[in-house]
Length: 335
Ligand code: KG4
Ligand code: ZN
Image (cartoon, rainbow, N blue to C red):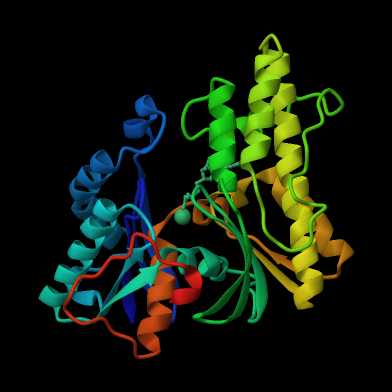
């Protein structure tokens, strides 16, 4: 079965074709970063309009790369939520109408389920259920008990800013362009580890919730109190990233001990962060657990994870009716 995946929840247009016997056949991602960068964040209306223009060219490129035609598509999965309502509607209308015209089933997929299952796109080692997932993206920070396909319980989440959001806001303070997470990480490589020490929020409190807005304010005060030369920027980037990485690692360890799971999956855009990957690998070695990371290209938003999650649901016999329903707000445990 060839499943077409369509991702348009935010500022990436992603198209992919996943074959249920042979795996991922082809995928294309178009990022709108250059479009939104002058505004310092995503402008929803511009995002929707840009998805409209990119879907058909990307679909043609993906079909060509897979040496397939539209007639070879057996099912279509699109992101149903959470995300920007206009952007979601573009992908959902496109996917639902195309499925109708091809007379194949369609299924709306939860964006975060896509992220949680992205580790299954890897060719070598893939996780087995149940596992603990650390989901760290621009909009979400969650520790999730992934019991089985479609059976997810949120163990802890952020009470305010998502970790990617905190990265982006701090990067902005350092004069980096939106979204600055990866650039801040690059800057941190030149930082002096002993110059600044940032707090590790909420680690002395029981439970698995996070809070990152105080850390962002701490970064703001440090920026205001210093002359921002190149070395100081690198030192702040280092201290900020170290505080985030340590905080995520402390809570992840707590969740591993609580669930007694032996597998950890990292998902979402911040999962591409090298310092976080290294620290979590160390944690898993110490705790004798397996650690699974999607390739960096499948950590950020992409169509492949939607095609994969949709393929699993279509194989299980799930189908959407002809209505087009998107859910801009959609808690993961309400799937
Ligand atoms: O998963 P994603 O593509 O979009 C959402 O669903 O939110 O994540 C994007 C987020 C942005 O905040 C971006 O700055 C951050 O992931 N990010 C990083 C890195 N690469 C992307 N943050 C820190 N280090 C990175 N290497
Ligand atoms: Zn995402």
